[in-house]
Length: 263
Ligand code: HEC
Ligand code: HEC
Ligand code: HEC
Ligand code: HEC
Image (cartoon, rainbow, N blue to C red):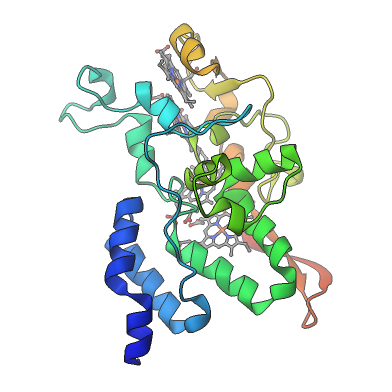
């Protein structure tokens, strides 16, 4: 490996930046670094720091970042129900924060692979980006569909816009909890084609939730529904079909099942 390559990627700068962004594991970082190096300088500079959370809530008519929920659903001095018997934080926000889903857009391996796919077929950039951003930045993607604005890495993965903040929040609370039961488990819901309810309902497993504090503070209404306990909900994103392309980049008409733990 040449010195110029090493100095070009400035490992300390990257480590510092990524550590400042999200609690990514050292293993994940090293894997991404190895991948970046092995794919050559096309990718250098593309594995960048995602929009960081500074505690500010990003919200649209449909979505809000997890900061809004953390006020009540994370560990706090008085919140005994959000700690286990050994005082470890078990609130949904605490459990979610270090998960792959919370980091689905910060994930350096994902960023590197999207960059590699685009580099291999630059003419298909828009299509590839829309596909890959659908599940890895679901709030920003669905909102852009509703607003009829473009879906792109340039808009979603940089800066502090509402879109970038929603994208940085990954597979977040107001995605999973706002997916209504209709169509789940059927082909139309796969590959990230879940629907988002339009009544501000946040579905959960418990009957008769004490809804007033949450509704007052967030405008979302906690609502019991059994579908949140079924795997078909997860299958909307964990079933991924992609279109096969021929050597000239045109669709062959075949689809590939890239992930299918549910089907
Ligand atoms: C239908 C939703 C969906 C779409 C669309 C999607 N992904 Fe994913 N992706 C996932 C899920 C779910 C996982 C986790 C799979 C697992 O570990 O079981 C994942 C994992 C990955 C990983 C592994 C990350 C890691 O750190 O191990 C990479 C890389 C990746 N996706 C790249 C892409 C690329 C590139 C595209 C666009 C071509 C894409 N994804 C489109 C849902 C999706
Ligand atoms: C990947 C989808 C997904 C994401 C993301 C997600 N949840 Fe959940 N959540 C669920 C499911 C599924 C259940 C029901 C689990 C059960 O019944 O065992 C649940 C349960 C809950 C409950 C009921 C808690 C309990 O102990 O019964 C609360 C509150 C909650 N989630 C809040 C949140 C918050 C806040 C966030 C964001 C930090 C979040 N969830 C992110 C899927 C998700
Ligand atoms: C002001 C405090 C507050 C905020 C902020 C808040 N919640 Fe809640 N949440 C509650 C309370 C209180 C309950 C009901 C607890 C009960 O009935 O035992 C609840 C219940 C829930 C449930 C379970 C519903 C059920 O029927 O199982 C989910 C899921 C949930 N909240 C998600 C969220 C999400 C997502 C956010 C962020 C958009 C959020 N909450 C923000 C206070 C809050
Ligand atoms: C909105 C899309 C979406 C939904 C809905 C969803 N996931 Fe995911 N999930 C993802 C993506 C994207 C990743 C990959 C993140 C990465 O590695 O970059 C992922 C990763 C995971 C992982 C980590 C896999 C690994 O190899 O480390 C688990 C576990 C997981 N999801 C479980 C679930 C469960 C259980 C549900 C249903 C309650 C669910 N997911 C619903 C998009 C989703």
